[in-house]
Image: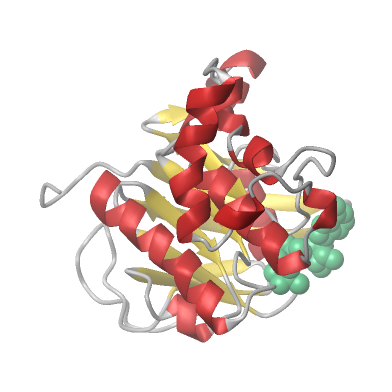
Length: 242
Ligand SMILES: Nc1ncnc2c1ncn2[C@@H]1O[C@H](COP(=O)(O)OP(=O)(O)OP(=O)(O)O)[C@@H](O)[C@H]1O
């Protein structure tokens, strides 16, 4: 990576409002290529709301989000959909796997949507599923999996097309420590080898401790974690969330 790579993702002054409630307030965040960034914070502090804005699935009430310098607000619906489908990978809290499809069909879906044929798409998904301990379940329907198994399929689906950015909301929440480590390893390897930027929302200190940088959310406000270098200045943040 060059010393000062351009951010792949940048949020400026993002608010998320639900009726009278301001769930996210003035959030500024940058994500560089190849870095793993963790967002932590207590339940209800606004982490998922912010993640959904950054991923382009929820429009901010104020502020802007841009990917590779292009603001989402300036993109047409088709362009934004194509961006989400082709350049982003998602692991969201509420599944979104297709229960009647098999494990390999679900995991290879981003490649199929990009026009790949079934055989090559399934072959591309196989090593990812194997590394996540799901190889032996490739032909099983997702409706017949445990919660932790389904979560690993969701991770495989988020990574199979080698996206530019992975957005993951509690991606290890349903996993034991061995499988959580396998998921974390996949994220770290993709970031190091492919320059993928990974944004993780997590309650798991063990997972967050492996991130290159950390943000903390409190009551809708985000700040850099204590002692974490700012991507803009390289200087450590002088204090944690206020
Ligand atoms: N669709 C919605 N409509 C109304 N209020 C919402 C909606 N989604 C979230 N909220 C509220 O916004 C606040 C932030 O929620 P959010 O899910 O972003 O927090 P979180 O930090 O991700 O929480 P958790 O760790 O429990 O997942 C909460 O008070 C929540 O009740």
